[in-house]
Image 1 (tube, helix red, strand yellow):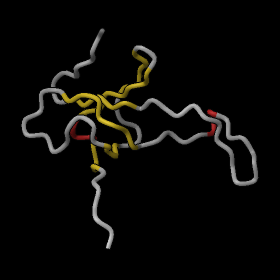
Image 2 (image 1 turned 90 degrees about the horizontal axis):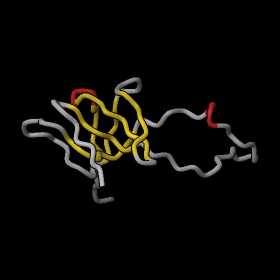
Image 3 (image 1 turned 180 degrees about the horizontal axis):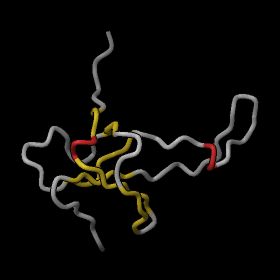
Length: 95
């Protein structure tokens, strides 16, 4: 089994999409070319970063046109610089 490990201060994001058909409320099927690229992804691996504020498995929000996208063993990944991570999704208690 092969594993990807990002180098330097990079983060590997798993951006594998749900391949289900998306429709509008009126039933119109949205083609892949019209879908907006998501900006939320799950962290798959972290490079050599001192005291990172995120960890593997966290869901993060990243810059729109950041990183390099590629396929590896049937999954889609995105390598982005650590500085391009904008926020981390955290669970909070409802009031």
